[in-house]
Image 1: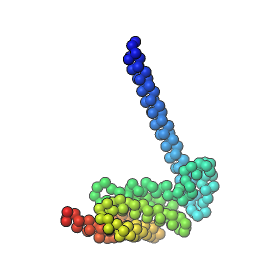
Image 2 (image 1 turned 135 degrees about the horizontal axis):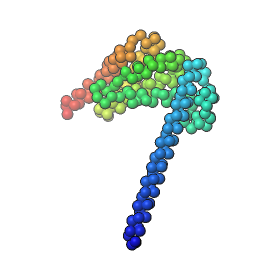
Image 3 (image 1 turned 120 degrees about the vertical axis):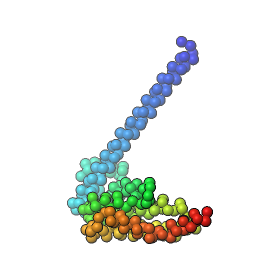
Image 4 (image 1 turned 90 degrees about the horizontal axis):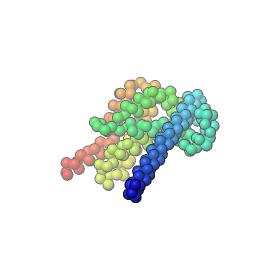
Length: 218
């Protein structure tokens, strides 16, 4: 076998080894990701169960790790405190709050989620600390979504006013949601989704009109 053939054979073996190592790393990451998700679910489920039993304010991190049967170091590898753990359960709502077509906001997932978790949400809203955590989280989710949808359409000088309006809109929407829960959910999630859409449209009407006016001028 000549030198070129030997070199080609070595390169093939080296390339195969690189691909094997890369595949191994990907597999390891997937296993690690599954472990992370499993641990976070254990902690989240433990917190939910404890909140239903004795309320958020009375739950300690020690209670959570005892219920989840994990070590304290495991908890702190994922979360800084129980507030972060509580908020983890709401992260998926950021994706659900946006639509690809039609009306940009779809509030129905919010209200269906609240309806499904009614007892837990009621417990959270009945205590001062957990109510503050929950409402702040929802306001942040909504304001971020509003900004992603509307802010790019605005002129620079309108940005400051828009931020004030987006904060007001998020706070009003969360107040509507929490009042619905406090009053025993007297209307269907579908009806409340419609009311929320109408409320957002009223608050942001000036922004849409301004954007429409600029489009016509252009």
